[in-house]
Length: 61
Image (cartoon, one colour):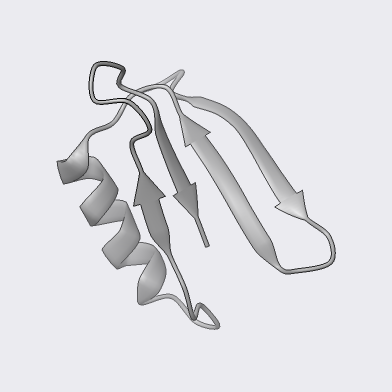
């Protein structure tokens, strides 16, 4: 998972972060979602795996 982080974007009008990972699955997604959710000042966090045959995962908070 060393090179898994592809890009981070921030929507300026809303404080929303999108992180796209090249590797991941539901186990990693649920773990990261739980860690981020329990951080300070986080009201929403989710992850999505757009296609079940590709290991790409998108985190949003």
